[in-house]
Image 1 (cartoon, rainbow, N blue to C red):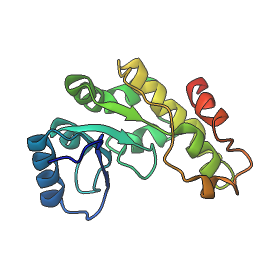
Image 2 (spheres, rainbow, N blue to C red):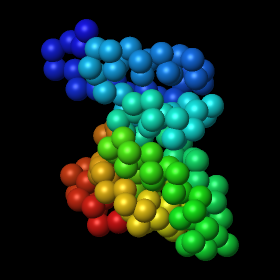
Image 3 (cartoon, helix red, strand yellow):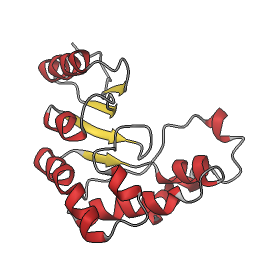
Image 4 (cartoon, one colour):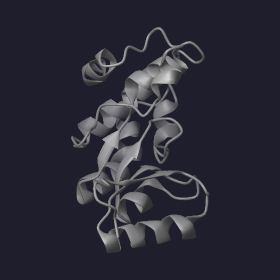
Length: 165
């Protein structure tokens, strides 16, 4: 049973074993505790969402990869992106799942290392939005101690900036 005050279980994507992941989702559903977080690389986003995942976090490194390869390709046109992402968006809508892209964190973390990725990330999020995904959460789970070395990340203000993207 969930402890008093437990809001959810966050799965971090490992172990990368679909049997363990789906067993966790079944047990959490049995005791009434939502599961959020990352998906194992061996599980598709649609499988995770259809199995009860309440929110999938982080555009990079968290689980948003079913249509990411197509979206990240600079040559991909909007129609191709929408076609690739349509099954994912339908699963999110069908299950009222939340999409947590953590855009400011992605901008700060990858901005200097891979500046070409951020426009692709925005295209992906905007594509999901065009496909009807409106359950989008703003925020980050970056630790304050990790943020202090990132001058572009401003606790509090960055959460508001997340809404602007």
